[in-house]
Image (tube, rainbow, N blue to C red; front, top):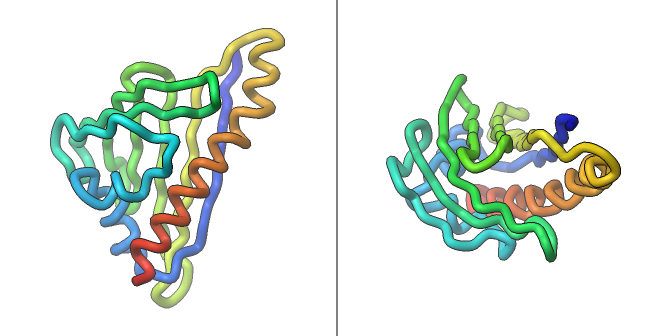
Length: 147
């Protein structure tokens, strides 16, 4: 079994503080950022940044649905880490300054993939699919914060 990684990023014409606040607002803004691949969104504990426990189902492909229960931490300023209690998936959101009144948002998901030929296909195609989903989240994040 090998580690699988998917990373995508976007520069946003909004302050890093407002971009991070939108990402960390699981009780409000965050649900609006999720595209149609997400369902059954529910905040179970907390609701803002570290200490939040949030559930959703992610329809990664036509046949692959992940039931996610994510524990959120903030290991460093400007960073949210979502660790799935139901799998090895860890998603890290990092927001940094990108010039005057601009932010760069980077999202990286890692997980332990399958072995053998199935693992080869997972390592080849799963990151592309997840990056498309994360691109949609980042586009909605930009639309939300560039107001």
